[in-house]
Image (cartoon, rainbow, N blue to C red; front, side, top):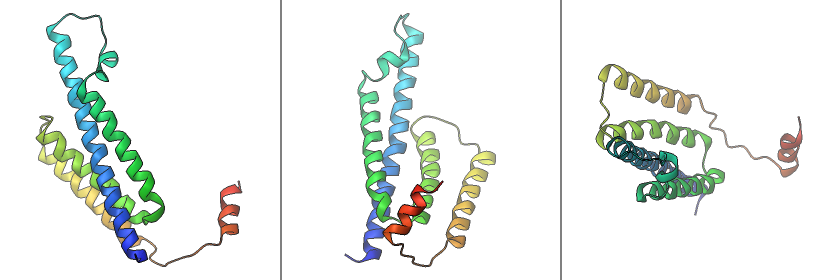
Length: 149
């Protein structure tokens, strides 16, 4: 597979890992919301923290977080940092959609459209100002950079 093909595959894996992380946050928040409802209806001595990861939403959220971490870690060496920055900004937009659709949060256009526009402009600026020259570094130079203080 060519270098560009590996980079595109790594970008796709990183995007899926970003999606898994954002879904995990929503699932965990939903689990917390369920625990809060239970706490309001039943007087219980247990805290939310002690019961959260005993529920299926807590376990699923933790599992998705681990899948996301593994995806990010496996894609990082093969993907351009500019592409990873784009994935990070897409996480904000994914989170806006998930919170509105599944968590019942309100969409306030005055703030949310402005925020999405600024995130998109920031991502565009990163792409346009990125260094597009292919560089190779010998191992001894990389080691010197990593060990110099």
